[in-house]
Image (cartoon, rainbow, N blue to C red; front, top):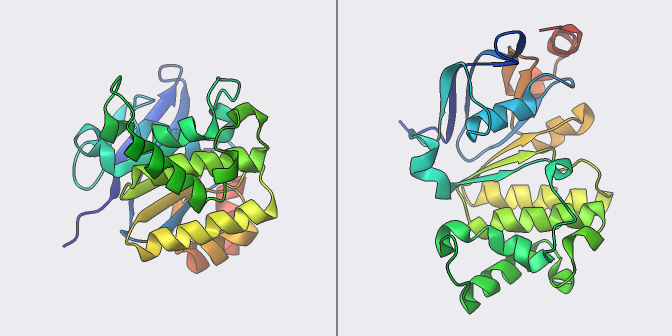
Length: 240
């Protein structure tokens, strides 16, 4: 039996102590080597699930395992790309600096960045067609370009599991096509990709698996089965 790259067991999380429920008894496993989407209405807990998994929020109950281990034991195998709106784009770094951040687990904190590291980061920028912008300040780039650079940082890490929160938000069609191509390349390489996604119309054409969420699991499985009218009505009319 293969080890699951991402396994959520009985996960519950409340905001403000016990007053506001964000996630309720979530059980889900992402299939290895597949493209999975987490879909649901605003406030459904999609980003919260990622944040809890990455230890950025404390769950009241349950756990998340990565490849059968706790996150700290396999952190180098897991790449997390938060929402673009959560990033301080005025921070004085250029695109190459951001891509190089994906190598910090390999480099080590406060260690010298070597030429080989810069070459790896440049290769990642090349892959997202941003090498020509390597020395531009990240805040000077367009939304689509920033997202490409963020993706380059994830690719530079060469992880086995990619968690990406709304990578298609605020980008142009050309960048969207490039990201989809990269997703398929990652899948072909045996990587697992899990994406918080908001566009119901494009989901079935991009993803193999869907977790439909509204604070609790509404349905999960093949995209064509989960995104049925019945399931969507339940998810988008639920109030927790």
